[in-house]
Image 1 (spheres, rainbow, N blue to C red):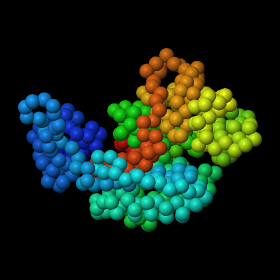
Image 2: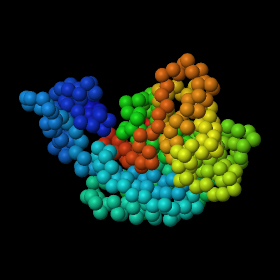
Image 3: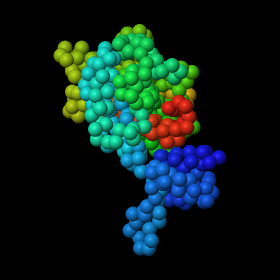
Image 4: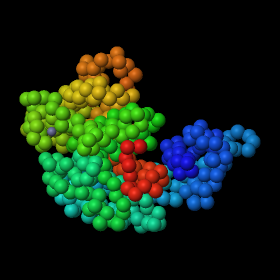
Length: 387
Ligand SMILES: [Zn+2]
């Protein structure tokens, strides 16, 4: 019972941040005496502190309980198709270090792991390394939930059969957990971003790869193999381009920034880079606007199926393409309405990610923090169903 109580207190502190003892009472359902004793233990261990709340009112300010930021740290690594980005979070989830390298991730697994290990080395110089709780990784590839092996065929050729957690542990000496990047993103948005306090969320990442992370009733949905949310490879155009996965007309061949730039490059017979896309939209270029609107329409149709299946309260759209704003969001909303029973989903919100590019790394670090704080007595580093 005491372990369960401790777990509830730490969970509340993780989720809410600074809380009064009264708030802890409400959040945990524990008695005042139990909370006093648990908080005293945690203060003694140096994990939690109790101090006066900043208050403008006269009189004695109330005491608030919070995690001690420097009591522990977690690394969060985002491995995309062309970059590795490392964030170091303190115990409260606040980033204290952030750096990235560009490299061809898809065709160089070993180089990517080596580059990530160098980033970890550099960040470790800033802190007491003994306080690092582990390394969380969000990777742009499906991850088998039982074996940790990447399902990288056609997606990240040099990673086929790879177990990145083992590779990174060998190089860094850190306990490592690996999830698909969209899963890491949904955790980050729920903990720190626009989906706070929301128990039913779909996060859709529109980057070079497209994928979704799903939280349902407060739990991350992983599915039989851990492959929930592979929406990038839903076919939306039977006559479309052949996708890198081998199917035809996948959402990814229409709605990834890379696909849009490729389309414009072909039409205009000059190379259009992803980085140029946003300035073309800002300038109101008709071709670029049309391509992004069509992408939004395809995304909306795909989301309609997802929404009918999962009934989320909120859909968060992230990845580079989310920066297109209403040019993208308008057609998403229209196609969603047209292809679902919109009366049933009148309250559904579609919002842009609040955390942008950093979501995957922050979410991966958050999973390590949750695991270390809440589940530290379990043999595995992490059970990721509770986020
Ligand atoms: Zn595909």
